[in-house]
Image 1 (cartoon, rainbow, N blue to C red):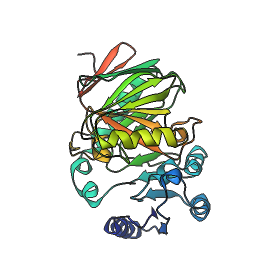
Image 2: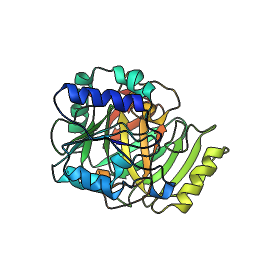
Image 3: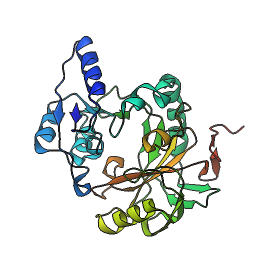
Length: 301
């Protein structure tokens, strides 16, 4: 269990109690709160400890390091570790909203969406707010995060409910208009517009402080402009509450991430991975409309 000084300790202690009650044992390690330029770094002690671990539960509140660490991804690839991401979450996430979903049903639907996604060659996302972004995706791993990580090499989150994939590096083109919450930055006071060319953000515009903050990150952090992920939320219990960890899993919402794509099988390392929520989008996989203005439709009916 990897924590930081801002961890909700009631969550950590409750999980530790369950671990003991099922006959296992835990080790709780705490990493420091770091500057944004080291957000995805674990300490060397934690990295070495995970080599001997069977399961990782990430509980850091100030960063997503247990999720996006390159060392963790290597251990998943080696099938020596499985993980549950609860990073950047509060006790409210742990007990309400998306936490109350039917996870068996959610997992089954995630598998259905992944089966549709895997053969697709291209993804396109639009929205009434102005998003129109597309990318080739053929061959990249489709990741189902719907609450279950029962085998070595698997990773899930809690609350959970999304399917995601990395676009081909350097190939995303178009416009993203972010009207939902963003990691690190929060809920923008007004929509933020990002122009994307060659897989990277080339401009950030918006009449709000959050747009200025995002522009500073894009201009000042290595590989922050990289388009790292497209994700589709499936969880019907997630609330529209201006919290990116809740809303990105919300049914019909899309999140597009900037920065590090190592978790998704890419080569682009960055200190940040910034999920940005687009509300009520439409999504096409090739010519098939699978999300119609926020309404998931996984059949031909």
